[in-house]
Length: 495
Image (cartoon, rainbow, N blue to C red; front, side):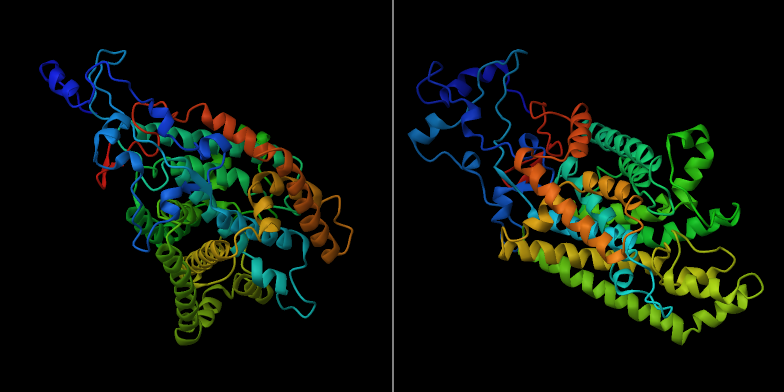
């Protein structure tokens, strides 16, 4: 904000038709619906961006047009009088366009939720030793999609397309820290009631990822993409090196609970390195998700690039994996390294069914394996590619067939609540046939979500997280517009 010096007050008054006592227009009259902060939704986008061209340009709001006649000058909001602090301001906080929810992201979350339900309720093999269709479609992919979408949400609550700058950056970092702490506590509470043999609760790990993501909120789209894809290599290598000096992870891992906090070092070791969703590798998903959230997700060019790029990344990863297996003799090299320490059945399980978060560290060739839920570079790249393609496809479909995906979008808008209910219900229903359990979970949670959404805007757990997070989130009355600490003026971002 620039200040008008006292010796320029006369000039400032002269610019306003009608003199210093002319009627002033209330800036609030120019404001559209407040969108996300009123509805509690984070998956919203400016209405001007919704009509953006393929090049990502944004239509100029009426209040940012030049004054062309006397009537425009009278209506145009001025701030030439001193404010309560005695300051003369010749710029103003620009009105915020209305926002609408990006339904495609909710649909993608709904798909991720169904995928996780399938993994927790359906059998892993078809009876002949081959992976079942449900596991082929969802194992490792649904949870990765969930993590990428969580990164998108973090970008949305910390500035959307404009990364926070200046004093606002640490404030927005605190938002992710508080949000992550709440999700962590919810996950620890849930873990006390859900056996790890039934559902490995991802929420404690996800909460810590949110806390770590506080270091990334000021990064822009390209930087986040570079960090995210670089971390698909760096993270697994660091994990491999660190786990070499750690005791082997438990074969039957248990869920983290509040009691786990009594041993903080052991708990942090599990969360970052040896658990089912190790933060050291899974931060790649969050980085890529935040990069998506910083992009113009309403532009057709962005959606097309995301979809095609995701498919190309997936195909490229598959081809590279096939080269390692058939061209470099990956399995033979691995078998030679571990044959004296591992049975054939265990080896086959690792390379076909994957693992519970990481692979052994007795050979560097493990890092070249592309198996579900292993946290190797190829696994991360493969699942990131699928996540990009699914998100892009969902955004494209909802743009064309708007309003026809409520059965996926409504549960997807409250996945935290739906996931917690699903985890609690898996145990009591475990004696039923697999397909029946799956159907009851999907249908029951969908009906419950539709009924709840009829009366409330958020799920109950989402409401708790939002209310606590809003205690530290900069308000719209902040000195600098809370949308990233910046606004656009004459096509430039002004802090």
